[in-house]
Length: 184
Image (cartoon, rainbow, N blue to C red):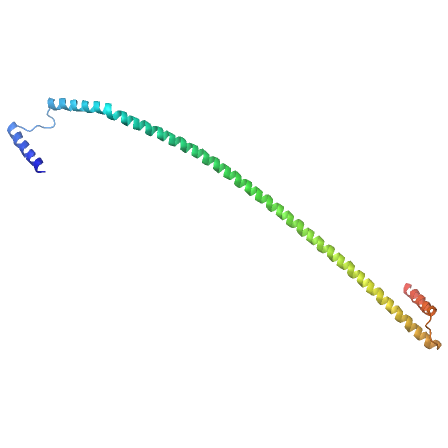
């Protein structure tokens, strides 16, 4: 920093001795010449050494971007295909679920109808068996009543006649009479 200050002071002294200070609008041919020479050297150096590297890196970057774009397009196409496949599978799954639900409903309805039919058949069988039992018990009761009626009739007739009636022929007469009464 000190060195820069000394140089500025020395230049200021030199300028004071040289005369008026130059303005930016003054034409200095030496400065123009050397500026063009440095620019040309710099341009040739950049053209020869830096430009091929920059161009190579730019081309590589361009190829890399193209490859990335191609990969992105491929992945986009795969994603669209996967999305379409997913939607198709979802639709198939929904249709399959609906058909399974319909089949399950039909099976449940069939099973319910079968159970109702079985219960109805069981009820009919129970009712028929109960009717048979009732008829059997009725027949037994009627037979018992007949026996008692025969015994009572014979007992009453024996009192009226004054002797005991217990032969088979006597019982048959009473049974025939009861049968005749039942048909009227």
